[in-house]
Picture (cartoon, rainbow, N blue to C red):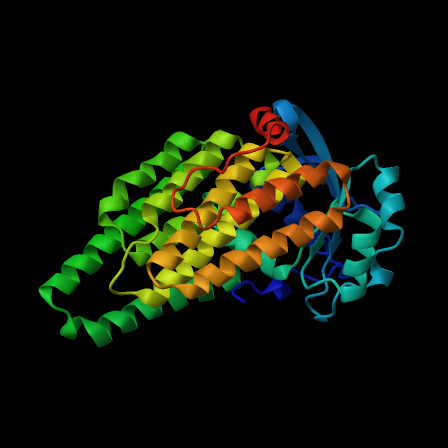
Length: 384
């Protein structure tokens, strides 16, 4: 891992540093766009470290406020998992503070028994941000998130920056003498485009608009200059957006993500096969995130349609260009998503399963149109 959570002092340490991990959690959620309803404080807290809320859009685009009870556990120094005994009366604590769900914010990982307990107690209304998930969010390019790393993990930031700089220097030293003029031109163009993509990401995250499609559409100007490295940078950006779809993503944003996937995959045919396969898997992951949150959280069949059309596109390209790995991956993700939906055991998800099954049967249809829907599903599709 790049981030060393041991840089944050132990929670039971005095000297004014015992609250640092909870303060980091507060600043982390602020950087991700959550509203802090209850800030960290010392003394008895009634089983909550802080309460954060997010806006969600449901059927007919009605907005609701979802409140998370956040439990912070900082065990990085002992490297032990968070156990059942560390999280007492989870459901009672959530109800006591008028929250809708439980969110574990851990510098290690939860134990398997704790995961099973949360599944049985909270159903779909819980989430866990373990050390790797927190790190992944921190490394998304954003001035606010970079500032969090500098503030709370200065040594990790210095070492990572030095590692990147050293890697670039070594690469230059070992390879530059073997570059042709064409190689240098290609590498230079790629570097310029990657820098531009970072600028677009920074612009996107610096605006007050949660779903700034106009900024995202600026990526289209690089379609004619793309390669698998450029495509990968774009797909990582899109995957980060898809992971936050449950915060109320509009269907128009899902449409923009779908169009960008079609524009940038694949970005090579004769070369870079391994990179092309990895990028295809990234696109499949984007589709899964959109579909999962569309069906289970947002009840948005339009977003679900764009997600499943991404899978259909990848499936079609895999068959056309001899990439059986991607064909297999699409089918596995269909099974995985169906399992998640089935596990919810909610009546209102029966339609989602039927919707999913219709699209799965339509995978081998050569065009990228949505398959015909029965009237009751078409009605749900038009409601959001």
